[in-house]
Length: 129
Image (cartoon, rainbow, N blue to C red; front, side):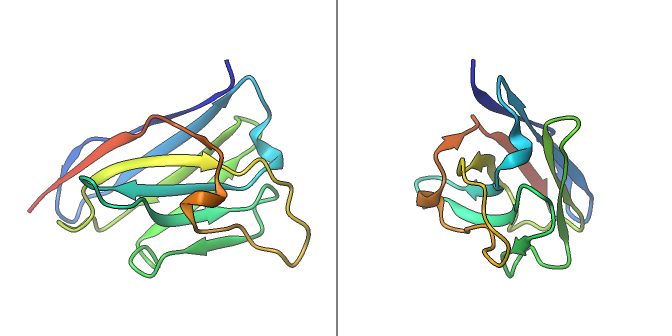
């Protein structure tokens, strides 16, 4: 089955770190851009970071810049989100998604949820203050 599966969500204390993983099944993720989004309650999905298929194009949301790092290991068909210095504002369901696009040089990965087509089920992150 073609799918993305997230893992790594947990309940941590403020200031601690977590690494989330997004692994693809039944297709090669390495060609495509992947983004991490987070969502709380009924709010719109908020982009956290994205990475192009070649790993050379990366973007971060302002609140993630400097604390979160997105990376990918195409040999493992996996994209990671390393989160450090977690804050009480960070709890959410974190989901990864791919846009099924091979972007050319000079075009960076998108940061809008409607640009992405295949989504994982999400993993819960809780931060206790």
